[in-house]
Length: 125
Length: 374
Image (cartoon, rainbow over all chains, first blue to last red; front, side, top):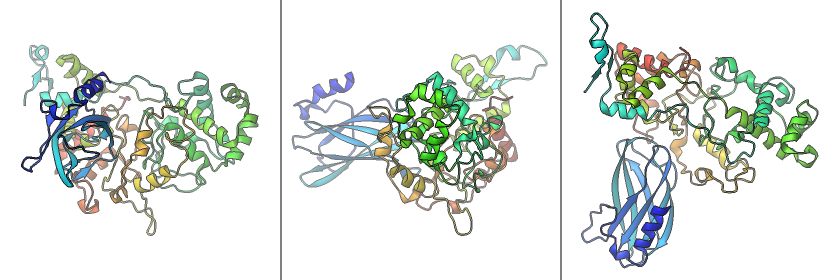
């Protein structure tokens, strides 16, 4: 909880100042706004949370979160819960990786009517 | 692959060399299966969880046919304590032949889902359904309340839950299920030969670890690696407690199919007895997130919950329909799996393993060390 509070303070009112926080997610589109990801501890087959930061002055009201295991051709068994914390920061709860291996976390964000899809790979042992 | 050879044994001429065969990575993976047993945590959705009086009453009710409408059988008739809380029939026999193999009742505390199809999200709900299922105990709520009120258990029951005159039949049913659950939470498997090996690895005591048979170590390597077993059979109970298509036919007869998780979810999502419902005693509704956020898929059809492998050698026959008689048959099933039986749009995990006869034997040897009995 202390950690979440810490991040919330950092991002409060400073959505553009997130470049150095967490892992930058991958998006192929040129000049796409940066999206950063802070992942809490991940335990196999247990729900975990992440913080997503949209580094852009445009207000983003919502994001969509999903994940897949590319090698196994399956995704999540539960729908993650997204909570907007304000200033482009979102907390995502109830992500559950039920198998070890390489997962690809996917986050879709709408900017000016265009949907951009960001990914991060997470290896779970 | 790095191996740790026991120096003490090497120094003894004529002694067979005992080794830890696992790589560093395999040792790290092995540590994730323990330590065993886990610490007990009371179920917040059950106010009599870990209550000694409720546990004693639950144990008595478990073995008493009072919980079936006509006194025909008890919980223990199918979940026989002398047979690892299961029986040897492929499919359970209630009032009729039921659809699935009787699962063991050990190590159930704290799971996310219960039953082969996960139709319950708490142990008390899983204990409740067979009592009122027509093909099993066949009580109505009212007949159950009448039976308890007229039984020798009434004083203990009222000492725990209060006057039954103030309890509707619904509440009596839930309270009985919660006493059963409080008892079932106490049923755990003992430590196994594998646990001793795992703990020795954690201590860095390679001399002790090398007492674990080579065949079991080779089987463990297959379990972690080429066999792909640990993708689903992981964690302290050797189960991710999720649902998978294991390539076992789901036809019950020429005209009936077992819907597996698909049917389990239909049941769960229409049930009043979930962690998100009014019968939970937990104001914080811990654990209810799962039933609220399930993602349904047509590939749920014919999938079944990954069973725990602790004490697995004691719980034959195997698979959701009890169609495989022994552990060797299970290993051969996965070794020669017919991928045509798998969902075309399901997980791409299982394929023929092409294990040699020696490797089949090694994998069985490993599985046998997960049991507490020697």
